Image 1: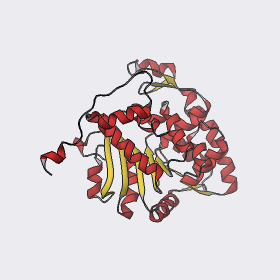
Image 2: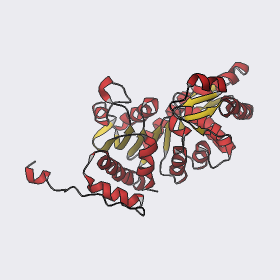
Image 3: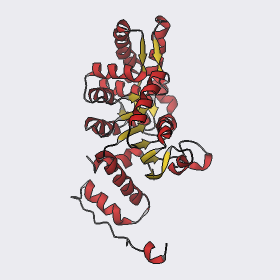
Image 4: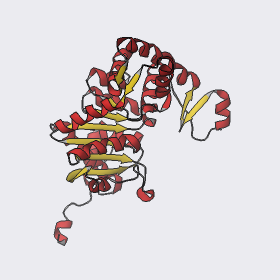
Length: 310
């Protein structure tokens, strides 16, 4: 490429006021030239295609953001049926169930954790979670539903089980409820982790013929992948939810679109730090895919990014 072709898009100053909308801000990002704002605009452009084309769209995310107000944004994406498949971690189930019925509280990163322990308060970053708003409420809500489902049949797939939970929650603030109502499967490959997982174990200790068939989830994922004409993914954070998304997409040659929002760096070789470029070598992202890595806190990036698309 010659010099002339590289110098085609002049940097324009942002023009922002109190009346600037998110869409106008995004338009400004398209010409701002600099750093994360330019990447956010690229992500916006990719998601706009993903959400509008005939495309099987995956949404993966970790549990921690569900303890925050970002849960409402995830819910709105689900309500509008902008995604087709959710892959997440067990803690999402914990926080979604708990917050449907009781409150979490704004706190601080800097408070004494020893004192919080004595006060019966758990700290998740700068979110304070009282004991009664976590384990107790989850047990109280999960066990009665398991009793009902067990009376219907003894073996359940993971996503199948979560759909039944969601429908019974019957609350529009719940991710599980909105996903179930809109026929969006929720896959949790690490389902025996966390409080919800402990409730499954506890129920199994009393009912040894109760079975959770996670391989049924893999069968359902394979059907989704092999039936898809194109696939895209918005992946928030790394870990098992990101990996399960790209892992299954390798069986169709990789994702056609991908947006990865993360704070992790690649220096340690971790999956969470791995750029989407690395996934090309594994055939988890196509060579000609449209993709971008956006670095920053998802509780800030997602409202700006998704808000302009809603």
